[in-house]
Length: 280
Image 1 (cartoon, helix red, strand yellow):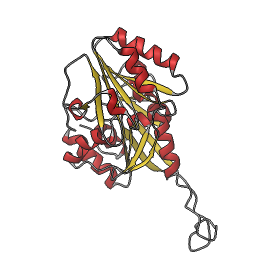
Image 2: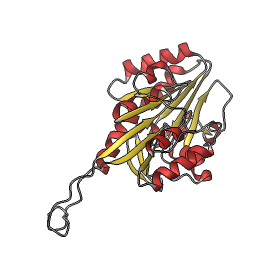
Image 3: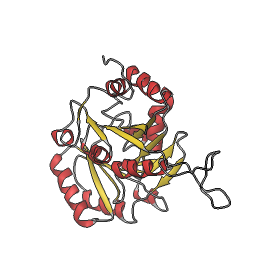
Image 4: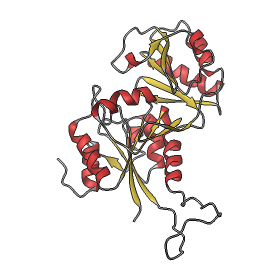
């Protein structure tokens, strides 16, 4: 039997008003206790992930962060990361300069910054970003550029500009009133595929160059993994496409639901159905 893995979005899927409902937390613990894999798949950065999972003691096996640009292990140690090409942040800032209702953030492995803001309001999550200037970007590796918009028209114009100017180098993923810009090779789906491929690799060779084998001398095959995804927004579409089984939430946009096998009311309901427990 293949190992089973759930890839779950955070905000709007299991995180609401900065916390994770107790029922979802208990279900995730049961899922892992049964020998299954739990993967967090989010646009959040390292520091933003720690902000929600550490206080609640949430345990997981891996996390795919920055909309697929970074993969970390259960101790939030970076195993793979892909930075944005040089010039992307500065070009974005030039494009939105003077536009109302826009906030431009940058996320890195060490710190998250707020570079430009004509909104002037935020949330608990946004307070994690330190106000900074372009000068603070000098010599700093940027993984992602989350942008917040209050005007959908400006958001659409920015999305179109990114596609034309940075095609093949950077990509923007829409998530409610945010656009998250990352390397063109990154997405939640690409991150999930890369993680599953690494987890499914055959055992490493021994120093003599032979593949590890059991006591009978038979080589151990790679362990297959069956995947489920759950997520509520447009930036989850690639994750749903990469999973064997995909589920949206009742409040997901129609375009997201169309990519899924169905909808579930919560992650806890999905886990209970997979573990053969009655749902609430």
